[in-house]
Image (cartoon, rainbow, N blue to C red):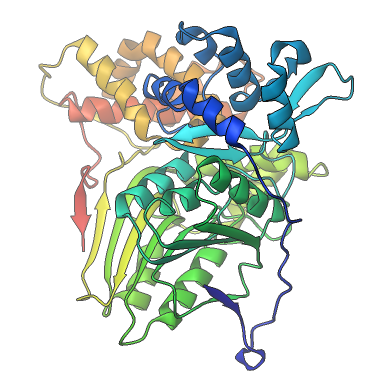
Length: 493
C-alpha cells in the first residue's frame, strides 16, 4: 500500500515504528455501546448544539438526556467527557473490560477510574482520542475538522485499496473501511496508530483496517492503491515554535500537504486510475486559499479537481488560537511573543485569511477545476453601510445569526466563542446600529470588552468575529450593504 523510498531516489529512508502488538478484544464494550444507545445519545446531543461539528459535547449533555440511567451517565462522563468516576459507580464487568483494553485506568489513589482515551461517535462510527490538546507535541487529536473529513470519506464510499495518510484517531479510516476492500492507515505518531487500531476494533473492521507509525515525509504511494485519503496538519507554525504534531504544518502551513500532493502527482501514470479525498488548510486572501494555485499547477490538465471551502476566518484569529495552544509547549515565551512570531511568519499582504476545505481529485480526468465557496466570508475590518429596509423580523435575524455559527471553525469556540454569542444575542440591536454607523467588527469588539482591562487580545478578536457573523447576517437580510466579496456557493474555475 505504501513503500519506503528506494536508495537511489534521493529520499532518506525511515525506520517503521509500529506500536507494541496489542490484540483488542472489546465484545463487551461493543455490545454495551449499542445496547445503551451510545451513538444515538452522542448524535442527538451534537444535533442540539450550536457547535454541530464538535466531536466532544458540553457536560450539559448529562442533563439534556433525561432518559439516561446512572450507568450510562457515568460512562458518558468517563469516556466522552473525560471526567474521573468513583470505582463503585461502574459495573465491575464493564469496568474490567474497559480497563483491560486500555480505555480507562485507576488513578493514583486507587478509588477512581480515569480515562486513558476519550470516546465519541459520528454517523454511527466510534472514534477515540487523547483527553487533551496542546500539552504534548504528539497527542492524538480529534476536532471538528476530523468529523468533516469523515463525512467526506463516507460520502465518497471509497472502494478497493485505500491508504489513509495521517490517520490520527482512525475515525476516517474506519469510515473508509465500511466500503473499501482494505485500508492501510499510517501516521507519524505511534499513539495515533494505536488509536486507529482501537477505533477499528470498536467498529468491527479489524480484518479490513491495519495501522502503523511511519514518517510521513518518507513514504511513497504504491501502485496498488486505488484511493488516498488524508487530513494532514495545515497550521502555519515557525520552525522554532514547539506545537502539537496534529496541527503543525510548518512555516507556511503546507509542508506535509504539499509533500503529499507531489507524491500523489508522481504516482500517476497514463494507465492509473486513482482518487484523492482530502481535508486541507491554507492561508489566502479574502477570496480564496493560496493552495489552489499549487493544485492547478500539479493536476490542472490531467485530473478533475473539486475544492469545497466550508470555513474561512481572519488569519489573525487563527494565529490567536495557535498561540494559545503553543503556550504550554513554549514556557520560555509569553503568549504575545508567540503571537508576534506567528504574525511575522505569514507577513504577506496577500495572507489575510485562513481556510478549511475538502478536496476531491480524480485521475484520469478532463482537467476540470472547480472551487466552491460555501463558507461565509468574514471580515473584521470592513465598514458597512445601511441598505434598504429589511422585511425580516428581529427574531428571524437572531435565528439566522445563530445558524451562521454552525460554519465557524474550531478556533472560535476554543477561544470562548459561546460566551461571545450570548453577549451578542443580548446586544444585537446595539451591534446592528453600530454597524450601520460605519464601525468595523473589530472596533465594536474592542468597545464591547473595554470594561475588562485584563481582556486579552484574543477576546477582542473572538468578539469581533462574532460581530462579523452578525454583519453578514444583516447583509443577507438586506439591512446592510455587503463588502463586495463572493456570495455563498459561488464557484470559481
